Amino acid sequence: MWRNLGGFPAEHPYRSTGVEPMLGRAFDLADAGPGDAALVPASGEVRWRLTLTATCHCP
Image (cartoon, rainbow, N blue to C red):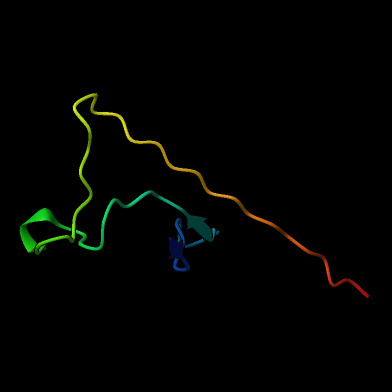
């Protein structure tokens, strides 16, 4: 998950939040140790799911 709080363009900046899948604990395979990276099957396809639940605590 990442957040862009600086925004662009400077005159009318926007803010955004992004979610991207990450397979394993290491951001870069060059830094991965044993068990830090996911194993992708021979099909080359890995699926992931994100479930969000929002609750309004409105007055």
